[in-house]
Length: 569
Ligand SMILES: Nc1ncnc2c1ncn2[C@@H]1O[C@H](COP(=O)(O)OP(=O)(O)OP(=O)(O)O)[C@@H](O)[C@H]1O
Image 1 (cartoon, rainbow, N blue to C red):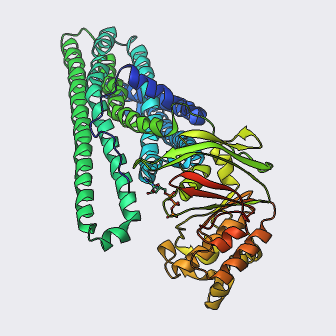
Image 2 (cartoon, rainbow, N blue to C red):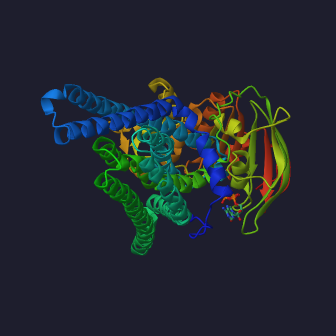
């Protein structure tokens, strides 16, 4: 079980670092660009209708109270008001739909890139599953808010107040001047609040990632934890982490609510200034009723987009926090997901000077061999000699500290090799599901006939069909319902099903008697005539069927030659 070692109190990012993250984020915006642009246009339409409505209301009130026209003489204003109301509702509905569409396109693109990167990662580079889950769910949602809420609002906050100013100037330029002078208060305040919000949001994300990774890891090992009586202790640890996350979230929310309150306060003061000024001018007869009332009605609408941008500013902060974690996972580029390389035409696998040292100091000394397709190499040696380590290096699960793995003399991407490899691990793992699903885990479209044929070769068919549900027998988590030996047989069928170019079998005959081991290996070799086969074994019967043998002792090769001349293990 692993635990993230990242610090819980991150350095604050602002200035250039935050802008760099934001540039990275924007490279994903292309996915929903058209819908986002249309959403902004719809918001502008709605803003224009608000101005028309304010004018119609002011004209109606002025007609009734000052000009004493009566409602009967105001058909034009009433029709204008109703039309503006209907159009405004239509624009708002359209805006919401388009913003959702833009957000959905960006969400899909981000998830595609993250999962594509995780799928393409070397196995030893894989991030904890909890972190990946946190990023593709909450992380992607936070980023979509940035695109669906903050970015359009930023544009709207620049355009609608400008539109209001242009409309107010012909009626009352003094009010327009007051609005223009007070407008910058809100963006300035937003930037001040933003400095603190960035650090808080990043801390919240770090805590969520650590908690997610920890929780996934502990859930996967729940049986072991219970067996060791450590479940309660772990539960307390998870509770403490949740509490840390709750407290970080509350700090973010507190700041978001407080900043909204202060923004409301400042915009209310600015509107009040306009109201007092208009009131005095009306009183002294410096302005007529209609422009004064129109200026009063429109002043809150001038500040509304700015206030809303202030409220969405925390969406930007949350997105930067999430994006930073994403960059850590998928890198600073936003590439298209890699398409799998359809390799498989190679003939010779060459291992050249491959070496590795575990953290504890145990190592494999530089080791070289070649293995042709259709040939079998047995790796033997006492327990702890480094046999499994060698297999894991070839499978790309451990990064070699030196040396190369070549296919037909060319350096190869571990992913390419992994895709064409059938692997029976030393401790195979089955999952909850039917036996057929477990065999077809890597080949979900495989036919039942093929699944059955592989199960026969792996000596699994008889015990599978002995149960009433046969291949449809449902297994519990970890293959519960089968014995350890039976799990190994099912996993062997799984390794054979993909018709691999390279077959790596770690102790394939464990738990079988000599006759069973011989039959199994002969069947496996006959079924994979074109595969290169690497067999890790303690079993001399099994090794005798190979073409060559490498004997390892404490990570060093003690024999490399034909099977016939090998010394007794
Ligand atoms: N993840 C690890 N961290 C540190 N040391 C490790 C790790 N995995 C293996 N080792 C050590 O490396 C050495 C080689 O282990 P490896 O599993 O490759 O041996 P092996 O020959 O396959 O043994 P066995 O036949 O028992 O499976 C052992 O001493 C083992 O303790």
